[in-house]
Image (cartoon, rainbow, N blue to C red; front, side):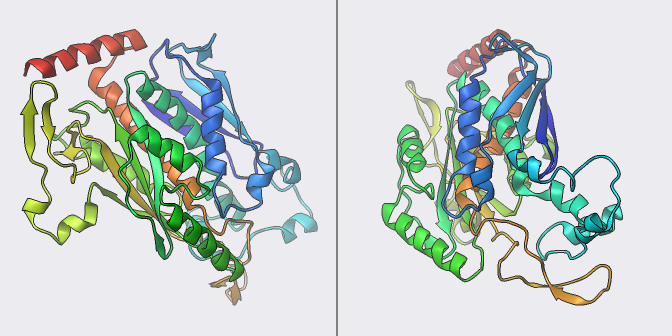
Length: 387
């Protein structure tokens, strides 16, 4: 499977096309929109979330509530487009007013300057419009469809925030259904209520100071069969593909799986998961320090992935930069932004991980219809039982 997205943050819409989804998958439209609304929530979001009420329209590849096997086309409208119809018009526009709105002062931490240099744009809006995190709305819509494919086979995806700035939440190993329920009720998507209050106060203080703040989010996936991914080539290792997908999220700067970087400071006996066998459970692990992966393949344990999000670089206390016209220093201009988008980033990460797992599932089991995929999975699970 694969997908492409198109569209700009202040353009009329975001568009996504999914190819390779099997036919006869029941598509729950309300669930797709619920996932989009989850992305818009979270303490610390800016005014844009008061404008946009995201929902997806499916305009291809689905008929009478089921996928047809053809490419699925999704559209997410930008409600804010009405205020940007002149600035973002596809037709040529001339005039001094529009020249004044040209962006020629790059913001530190954004794609502005690199993109302007690479694509030879003298109006940096051509860069910032596409590099905006608004694009993740399309990725969440895509991931929501992928989640529905995973759900067909008993695979559940959850996410939580484990750190915002200086405040870290205490780890609490809840059953995945309870984790989903509790985090959904939290404005910062944490289980630890004491940490929740501290995080909210921390975000308020940072916003008051005109600054921004990042954090660490975690995605947990249960019900994944053994053997997704492969050890035979570097680009078939599923943990590597998930790590790439996580770091591709706007403002994400790192990824770890299982205990991650902690493994570099402790002994092997404290890292590797001992193998057990019982007739009821088959082969399984005593612990899950490696986060559900060995040799680039899933081992049947829950997948545990963490991503680190840097503070959003658009600050109300702007940093120094250089005007590309005059080459003179200035303090970077402000575009509307969030003081903290870590809770929303947790939702985005759920969906990029879900997509990679759905791709790996289809690569392993194949099939043009959901029934064919199900038969292939059942045959494989019977093979594992006999091993």
